[in-house]
Length: 216
Image (cartoon, rainbow, N blue to C red):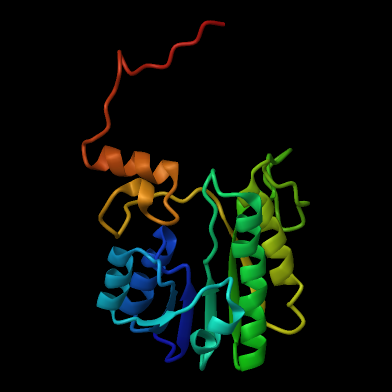
């Protein structure tokens, strides 16, 4: 149902972000998308084609976020980053400092009614005696991205008395990318998404009898 509110999406050029932007615009919502000068051209064109207002900025540059949050009612904060080879300091600057910069911008601007911080189940690591709930302790996986997302989530929750913050932890995401191109270069794409996409396009190859054999 259309809300007639202004919605900001960070990370809108990514795999999940493009799907969210498409879903919201198809429902008639008015959206802004934070994009970088270095954002993939195909993703920027896709968002523009949806009718989204594009605002140039960078989470790591707090002075660039004022226009993005201006007049915004709801924020979906999907922006972040960190591939397997991303140095830990860069991963933390994007995810942790970037989250803090955005929330400070929202406080300065005022008027934000809902701030949805998108996190990952990776902050809980290997869960013992599943299922886990929101009280399960932080035990991030041993990778820079999971550690950075853990700290970013803590930053987001530290603002709960000043902003209406909600945290959503996504499990492994899969599906068909909305942006054409080399899957390994699409922001936010996961290995599982690459496998499902290859199967859908008939590009998946089996070797041998494609059965799993064990020698116990």
